[in-house]
Image (cartoon, rainbow, N blue to C red; front, side):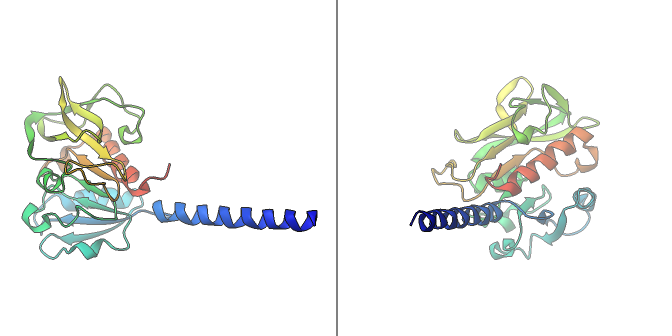
Length: 232
């Protein structure tokens, strides 16, 4: 009888471990990150950013905003919304996305209720940001003031909701966040649970080639944290 009980307990443990492994694999990508890169058509700096992501080992599929539909996110680990997109074409299609999203387009972030519809803007001549939570993975190990641009340029910012985690702000103004994230399950500004991790990122259209190495470290951290979607 004791031997029978022991065998039952071992079996139950194996089933539990298998179930946990399956749950983790559903949240975090098992292999290279597969990214859906949403952009405007041609004539932008998007190929420069795509090439950067590909060098990181990501599988990147780019898609023009005028053909995008919400069902296109299926099968990807993360969606990146380029600052070049036409926000009216994306609209609220990503708000309830089960796939994590990184927004570099403030208007789309506002429509998706990461921030208020009028609670975003951009600095016209800036090159540094202030890291506020250096221990968070989104900070990429950086701290204090960080030069994210080689030369002064446009840096986007927004006012995050109370359940967002602010990672970096405009120097001297903690209310204006340039990088912030929503963990899966917390509530957005519409008091709705966020279905997957979502990140706001400061990069403005035309500044892609102005990014420093530290700027790209922050961008890579945004993609990687989002893609894990709740896994450590």
